[in-house]
Image: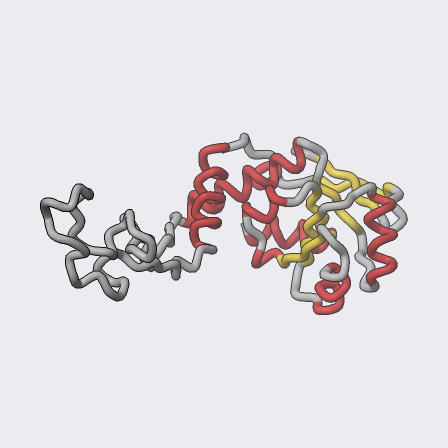
Length: 202
């Protein structure tokens, strides 16, 4: 079973914690993580983009000049794509980019991401967490971390307010933890309670 050190807010090691092999010691499944990230980013897209085709732009009802005899290329409408103010050939239209993944794949991807953090020594466990911005900055400096995701066991408004004032730092709860956020940030910081809850939930 993988072990991880427990740190206090001063960055000093105060103990060790044994992690669940079933969650933090899994073999990396790169295809599963890739599928999750791809679906996550696709689901963030609004899909509201819209540009007019030649059938939708105004004007262009009259043939600009006769078919033959002018020496110029034949033209049927001033709203053809090659004309200024003409329509777009393959205009993007509103569409749904949503992709769905089954629960088993999502769980495999999350376990792989968590295991990757443990393997790369980027998972940090804190015995407690500071709830003031200035103190939180000192904690991150003591841990030598800049870009981090802080995970708490339950929603804590003070921690959320504290972290959002620090650039490159975000917060999540065990219930909202996802593969994309775990992979996005350099370090994953969990409270001791959060680790125990992760092992219960997942």
